[in-house]
Image 1 (cartoon, rainbow, N blue to C red):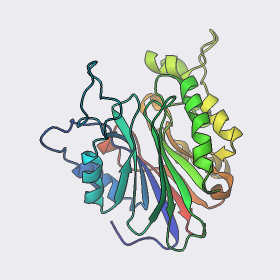
Image 2 (image 1 turned 60 degrees about the vertical axis):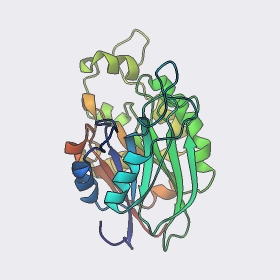
Image 3 (image 1 turned 90 degrees about the vertical axis):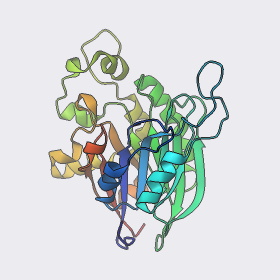
Length: 288
């Protein structure tokens, strides 16, 4: 990783994709490290880290409630990148969200949303950087993949902790839901796999069409999709390219209006060889 940036803030969404569970040997992160470091991020919003393997098991075979998160995989990745990291617990899932940041950024507040209604759990970090006028709240999110309706409920419960510390806030990660730009790109909804159709489309007996409830919930809280906004201005199709299975742009950002004014760029970037998702890089001016 290079020296800290002075003119921009680079935020990367990266879905690690759970690999070999942590037994005696930690998995090889060479491909992940190369993919992340190539974009020289200041902050990395991570999904699907293994934080469960080291937990004791309850009689039902699931991780025991209240057991400490297994931090080994997260710490290995952060050490290799030369970054700090925190990993959040997951209430139901065995994969976790985490946030990594450059050592010159100061962590002012950390919060984990690891109770119901959250499925994977969400992580939030309030960070202050050298020269930033105000701190920024960063949320690494991973919404319920089985129900867009439940993902929207998770979104409602995310709003208050996301906005309470700073007017400058963003959520980024795997939203697991369609978005309006998928409609613009002409996704063939009927061609989605059955589990995706049942999770992500409107279930009213009508023709296949996307359930956009999560995006509507976030819009009611004045959060906006920077890639959608940039695409409306430029028409560049790369800005709204698919990032996940089924041809959907499930990996994306939503920003508060004051932070939206500082967006320089937001687009999918190379690195999906290390994952089953395409990373997304957001670039902001550092004069926030």
